Image 1: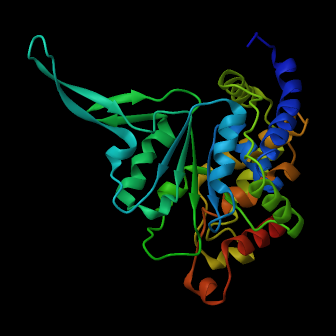
Image 2 (image 1 turned 30 degrees about the vertical axis):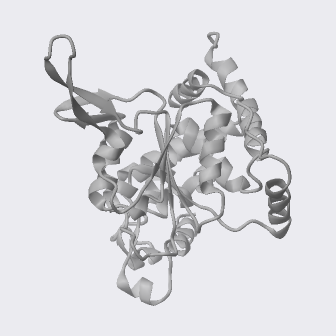
Length: 326
């Protein structure tokens, strides 16, 4: 990629978004809001948790995205017997045939990639789930006393089934907090499902055309950190996150046992900046914060027993808080 100044890079971002949406759309039918949020996380250098019942093309979406952006893709199918070493890697004992000398060699696991799909992440115990924590936060892993830096870009896109709870392990709050967005994946419309059936039952399945590369993606991620910050947006992001906490004075906060922490404010601010930039706006507004607010907050609040007994859910409470903050 030739060197581009920030102005040219910014102007090319909107075209890159259009190209990615079109490329992914040749394989994945519908899910427009899901794709828009995923691309926002992508240029924000943020991890995503996709929540939906089986059969909604969550895995296909992630795999297709890797094809479209031209990065190395790795997949781990999470199961109850999965061990941390199955993700990170392990040391093996090797013997030199000539000298007979033995030494330990690190064999890298599937986490050494650019885009890692953690499929059905809640099907493995917390010990194995936690194997991702350091990688998601520091872009590095530690094994046998040695720290290995992961190549950039490095993103974790995880899937989770919200319905079937037998044999699953809820994600710890600390683990959920590492995900920038939690994105619900819903059922397609009738027309979309008909198109999906047509595509998958005739001929061969298409593959997404590569329209980006790792170098350009890293350039976009760097650009987003250099764009000007809107002080009003920062204040609004902090006000929205703090409104989920006890003592905030917001009526709906009474239903929340634990509110969103400071990382939510950070993700609201950078998410709004990315959302605005992808849609051609250099300076984000409060409306851009609201566009990503539910995805940032829904997995960062813990409802109390009264809210659960009343049949309330996180999405409903977040919507009320957004309205109350204004």
